[in-house]
Image 1 (tube, rainbow, N blue to C red):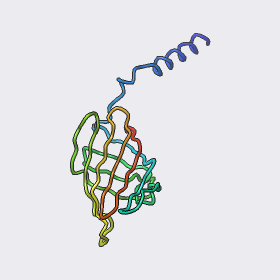
Image 2 (image 1 turned 120 degrees about the vertical axis):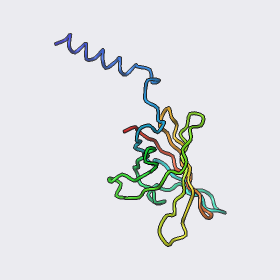
Image 3 (image 1 turned 30 degrees about the vertical axis):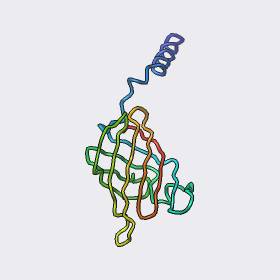
Image 4 (image 1 turned 90 degrees about the vertical axis):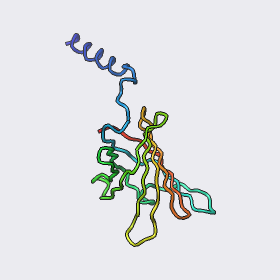
Amino acid sequence: MNKLMNQVIMSAAALALSPLASAEPFDGKKVMLCASQYAAECIAGRDCETVTPASVNLPDFFLVDIAKKQISATPESGSTATTPIERVEHLDGKLMLQGADDGIKDVRDGAGWTMSINESNGKLVMTTAGDGLAVVVFGACALR
């Protein structure tokens, strides 16, 4: 039994110490599950303030699917929101995504957005800009 336990421990140690370079990149070839962690809302003429992602209509979890050119809320987030990805570019080790969304029908709340996902660690930064309003969101992604 000790020999088997030693083999398990050695295998686990080898996996834990394997170089991070062998990890898959966050380059958009796989769907990513992302989480909003921190958000700030900036209104023209005022200081920016920390807000929850939900308070600026962002789901806690969302999927980034480059093949479908779509970002969508997960069913667990309680939302069915989706937005198209209009531009995809790789720049300096980041996956850059851009789009625009009309928001709520018949409400003048349309905005443009840019998302940057670090291709080596999955950290994301997203900015959204509309009439006199900007939102900055920080988060992280995992490959699915």
